[in-house]
Image 1: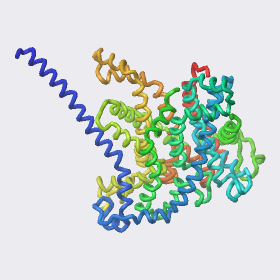
Image 2: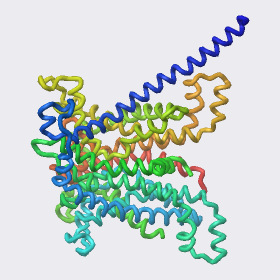
Image 3: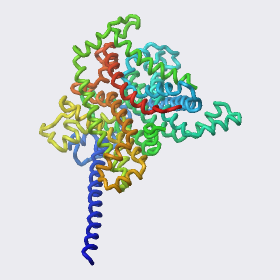
Image 4: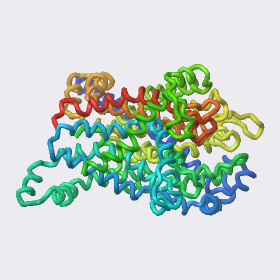
Length: 302
Length: 281
């Protein structure tokens, strides 16, 4: 073996090693980060399965002597989880349907016709979604206290304030912009000739919209529905400010009921937090692809 | 097809925005009709800047919040995205783990981190200190520490958000660009700085907008922890305090809302400009 060949082999070996060493380092780094990332959630889950007496006696960081579902049972009843979960659904589901309907019709008009006001219109919708909520909350609160509607629409009080209708309305108004933006970008990628062919076949605007464009937008609609579910379910501010009756609050904002004035049972709180977080985590695990594509559809232009 | 959506968004978002601006120049107390409001010019603004104690701390906290997200959490998210974009075993699992906090509400994040930071029952103090003998750090109660403790929790979520957006951006980069850089013998850092990062420009703009808006919106987590007092004052909390809290000055709340509008206008315009420039819809 010539010295040149030896040199070449050592060089190749060093390159391999120098490639592998950072790789190992990277894996160690990512693994440690992942553990740190999971730790808070794991800690909440761990605490939630330990009865208060167990942690009081042995300390929180200790091997559990008893594991039980007692905290979950208490959270379920004391926190009235089923009731608040139902409230969340009453608000979230109609809101998603309306948001997608509104957003897709606006996006359809903008994509289908070339009006002079298309760009201003899109800005009108999109910018509404970018404002911090606190910018509008004060007048909105006063407005909600002053709009009277028939009792059957508002659930008795006759005011939009403290009604499901009011929360649905503000979620729809606030979120439609984002979906309009995503859908209008998505519809631009659908060839115009499809709509024209349908027009030749005598399909009216409404037929074109429901029969051709909407079915083609299914992936985008699925992605947006997933995102909006999480966002509206997770809403805290609108419900805290615009819903005064504790038993009508959706689940995320109802958690404050479990905070005691003098004493907070951390084991109970952790069980309630796990229960409330569970739907969003399940949706994320089941529909991860839709979730992420929805976000990136919004971030990437067209 | 346009009428109803436009009406809803106009009435519930843009009308209140304009109303906030108008009300910020009046002394309306919210009790009588709007007709009882008197025009007071810039009095509310002068008062919040001079005799409203929580105002300047809130400004400072929002600024620190933004700086932390922009200069700590965002670069870390980009770093993770860059590493996970390499063909690495388990990349998907890592991505899911880092992304997990993003699906949680800030309210839940507040509760989870309260468990971590709790003085006597928390994870951190029980591991690193000795709560049984009174040797404890009150992470969330100490006004010098609590903002930073909360920012760690907020960053925990922001990193995952930024990572996912950047991962999408990195996937969209033409691989030949990087190959060219590699052939030219560019080191990894050099290639990242001169080739990859500039190619991420559209995503960078989105990230800047998202980061600024998130920093201005911050509310839920501090409200859960201590209603936004004692070291955790934020502009958003002051606005809310003036409607549902103890202080009830519509004018003050609206003036702070206007300050938020003025700050948020910048990223909104940047984003809109970036989305629609050169566009013939």
